[in-house]
Length: 281
Length: 202
Image (cartoon, rainbow over all chains, first blue to last red):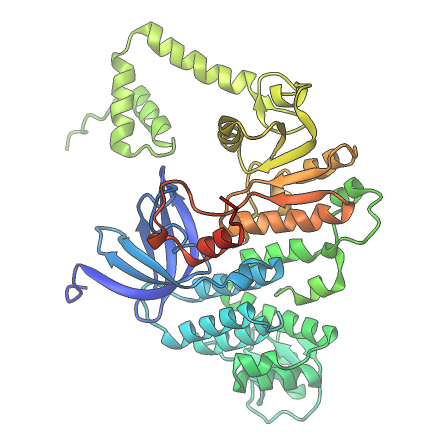
């Protein structure tokens, strides 16, 4: 820390915001050079603040910071990319926020992970363009790999034996696929189809963009979402907040709201199959 | 070793109570507590009364969920207000801000929160259900979303649009643009782009 000067420049993606006091906010930023860090923006909630808008969550910004006693302080910020197309679409917002939450939960403060940063930019750029929401699956898989939890997809995670081309047990707690003979040793898991195994293998060795080009049917997407959701839950030992939120967005209207809406003719998009299948968890 | 004499327990308790207030640090809390200690009984009682009254007499309007002393609240029971529009806001203070602007004469709906995926605040955690119930009467033709122009505010507005749009109610959003006194140079791209879209003939 001593070698760093009192002020520094960095770029980063704003992951989240917490309000502090009357007009300040604390932002969690993920930067390729600084890693994840929290910093304060003073007066950012006042209408005349010059940084407001440049530090919204889901914004890639160029920022200048000054070292503070406990938290560093933003002195300038300028948007590099605001991902406007994501902001205009509720489904894209939710997937993007889910990806940001994963980055937040899978990283520790001030540890640079340029590859993970690149991955985050890729998924945000994809969502900002016309990538299908299923790009989230490839993001999950790559994130697990980059943070040291790579899933074992070609050999048995327990004995290392080569897996035959057939359905297998996906055991998140064992770290990936498990062969027939090791099945009794894997405490939990779910059977995944050959298609799902192939899709995961493909995703793990190709870029997010290539995976986004893949047309996944709903059944396959759901299978991947459940399996990767298991893997993430095992690492984090909890559900993600935005994952639960997505669930609430996608779940059929709760009894109360359905009752309250009464005689609504057209089915609300909230109940559509498409929504619930594109949800990350 | 002798016990270090500590602050008398009642004062300590008051300091802690003040410390729990937003924006009050440990030093300010101490200063406030010692100030209360020095004030006259009358002033101290006035404070006690005021705090007690707020908790005793203020409730949520059964219709719009704004804070009120009488139920329904002043806005909901005012016949001169336009009953065909509802302005949806995050918190009671936003109602005051909009009233101050003098540009709105319809009804309100206070959500008491905002959808926040990162913190796991979902549709069940805010007063959304009540809004849907209000719309059932059929009187309302327009719902104005006046949530903050932040990521969460926008997400909330879009969610509500999805929820009630199919019921045939028009859902509108407050315009986004430059605040008065702003510097164009420091404005973020998104705001500027929206301001350009929403430009008006001079």
